[in-house]
Figure 1 (spheres, rainbow, N blue to C red):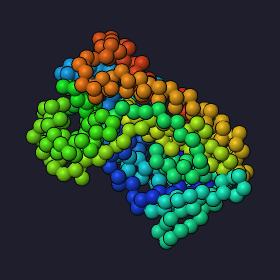
Figure 2 (cartoon, rainbow, N blue to C red; figure 1 turned 60 degrees about the vertical axis):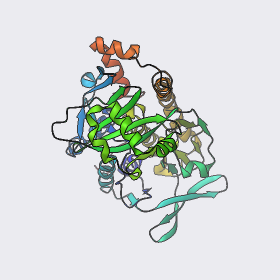
Figure 3 (cartoon, rainbow, N blue to C red; figure 1 turned 180 degrees about the vertical axis):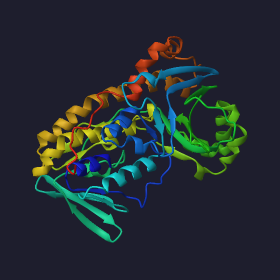
Figure 4 (cartoon, helix red, strand yellow; figure 1 turned 45 degrees about the vertical axis):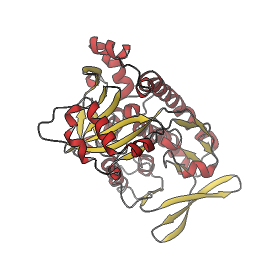
Length: 388
């Protein structure tokens, strides 16, 4: 969506395909980091965006066996917005869609799912899709697969995936919030259990970390076991875990960390999770995807103005975004190995040394704030608004 809006803003005709009738799907990436908010500021859209209901977090804290530790302080970031905005992703997507509709070259097709690629010789020249009125073909100078970790575009293009592994999966669920509930740290590690809680004003969005492939065991053990596990981690929520009274209220995220060896071939490229599936650690997936989109728009806008782009241009996009992808995934894999794996194996927990240092020496909190808030090689808007 971000890439489509930026290209339409630059005067390129764009068609965005969205499989569903709306964006109202829960449990998607909902953390809008300062790096993404800075892009909205550069576009002149930040003030309007922040009028949408959201929560703002300026410090990142964790509770490790009852010890509250501050890990990152975003107050010193060199950005306009020095906080993470927690906002349902559907609101973010609706906001971008409305911005896109301001440009005559932007076309959004809802309830339209790409089913395959159109190939002419050795070049991709469009997509086949199933829409509201049946099958259709969308011809294009470039097809961009941004259809997630189960990408049909990358499979149809024959891209090779390198799997890096993940020891955990995540169970997402809602837990009612009551008046007077104290603020909760983002992460809680207690009694060998790991939970992330996101404040949604009227409810807590709860992410409960489980060992890879163990969801079926929980189903056999029953909901009472899951309720007890959550209550052991966050005792204040014990009475409310009974609201999780049916497995339909529990959503499984199968965590995977992977990346394509090659993101492109003539006429097609992948970005975001379709190019590199991220662990939910740090909530960086949506923000890395947005950075991919901006880098792609910066590189593609002028070439697309005159026709199909060459493989050299697509290769430059991959070359620019591969480094931040690899560094971010390496950090996630390290956290998985050193912090999460021992918890899942039931080993004794102790705050990691970096956590203890960040908590004791507040000026060091600026380092994880930079990594978390800005990421590696943050992009900037380089395309012009063709309609100003």
